[in-house]
Figure (cartoon, rainbow, N blue to C red):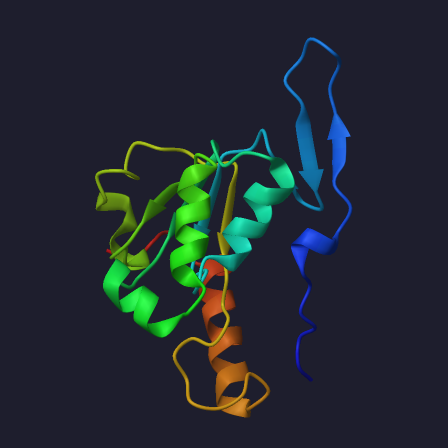
Length: 152
C-alpha cells in the first residue's frame, strides 16, 4: 500500500505566544522553536514547507547527499526551494553523507531537537510498494531505532 502524500502547507498551523514574546508556530510534531535537522529531503520541498509554515528557517538545517549541481539537474524545483530556504534563514548543506555527518564542520558541534530522515525512494528502481523496497525500509528503520551506537 502506498503511503499517502501530505502537503505540509495545507495543514493548519497553531500559533502560541503573547504580544511581547516571539511567536512559536506548531505544525504537527514540529515547532518553529525547535532546532530541526532534515536529512534526505530530495528537492528540499519538505524543508521549504516547514519554513513557510513557520515564517522563518532560523532553526532549520536541511542537508543533501548531492552536490548543488547534481541536485538542480535531478529536481527541477530544487533551485527555487534552496533559494527560498536561504532567504528564510535556513542553513542548506550539500554533499552531506549521513554516515559522516558527525564529522561535518557545520554539524559536529550542533544539537537538534528533531532529526527528520525522509525516505522517499532510497535510490531504488520501482515503486515503494515493491517487496524489496519495503524490506529495505524495515531493515533500515530497525537499525536506526534499535542499534545502541552509530556505525564507526
